[in-house]
Length: 361
Image (cartoon, rainbow, N blue to C red):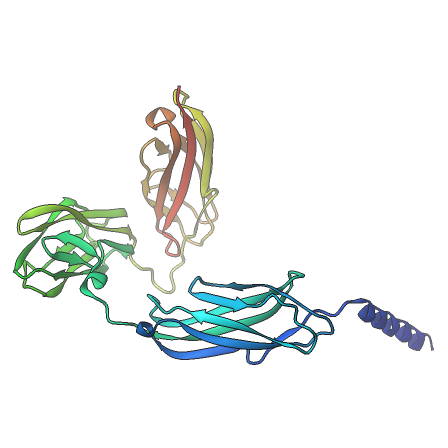
């Protein structure tokens, strides 16, 4: 009897709570998703009209329709929608310069700032034919154009070879000679380019980094190649960079894991003639094997007591200092990076950003 009475009281409370809670405005779109299928980029914008019904017991007004991309534009009315009435939201997608598949969402909000519906569109864009200038946007002079000038290779394991290429074309009506002039060399980059390009000929400049196991290198590899057309060096440079790290580990090896106490060091406001500012950090090894620091890189006014060759036992940590000398920095905001490369196979490179504001004397 007591149990039945308790159950009755609980049910009564739930019913009263339901009656006291106002009904949410409900705008239902059927369907709420639309597939445009294949869209020809040359044909331009496409539009679909979503039709929705107010299935709540009170009028509602669409305050806004928020899209996930500027390529998708909604059009809608802010006229009150009475219960049982319908409204439309027209969604236009612009395929220009967006080849490939796409999927976009649109969130519909009421004047109560509640999300009352979500719409989605998808499809695939068939790209239009690109002109030579679009496919090769970088002008190297003398009729030679390139697809890009930067090759970022990320990590390069010892004994590994990684490759990339840059497209090159001769848009002139005469043959041209092409030469790459090294301006900065790491000693690990191999660059090959066609010696001559016939009128209209499209080729590639091939770049490859390789670090020998017999002569290991660690840390940042940087290279810069100046482009000369018909023997005349221009102002354009091809640049490449990578981070040289240990060989790829075996599957069963115990591994070290590096953790640095701070990824961002702020020295605040410093006078130009102030003494060197210092902050203390730590490098911990949370892995199962000893951790070895392979390279430490910093520039400008930044320095550190952490050195290549430092070893941290499993479950141990070492303290080190990061210092900033305002006398070696120009007045104003200053920033620099401290790069630490270890034999942690999961995250070989750690980058610590250091900032300061240097005030003139």
